[in-house]
Image (cartoon, rainbow, N blue to C red):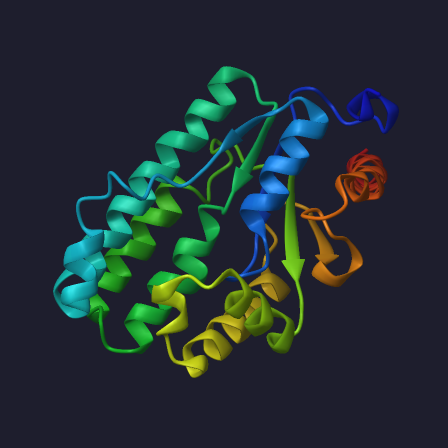
Length: 222
């Protein structure tokens, strides 16, 4: 069954998946791409030259890390739109400045000068009429207890060793960020309302919601 045509989702749509660690962004990205016949766009972590350095010295490398992320995500966003769309994207360029760079600055890991420089560069590159924003951002939301349960279940060593308070802070930062986000339309999905790992068919009601939501937002623009 062609779910994309059934629910009226344009073949050139670009949909970004956002949410804190543990909510299932990668699973949602793959499931939507498979169901819609879209390509995927994932963050390239293995080729990041600053990541290991950053974990050994936050203050020395936080600015470099964020600039690298900004450049790579900007290039990827351009590539997606030059290709003609039809992509599901795991994590957005907006989270870098709205959550991570801001957190580094507020925790003293990035100087005020570096933070202001980063924000100015981000605004010049991204917050302009010429930058191709996604058609839709899907925010995967759940309670902090739900998120912590999922982090425990997937059992990644680095995540298990991370203090619970870090995940609580990250959850709160994401909630604050999405509540003021307006670069593109936002559809919120509660992670308890579907189970893509055990029920592949649960993707169809999500696609139906996406199609309806996109039609509504398009109608409002007219």
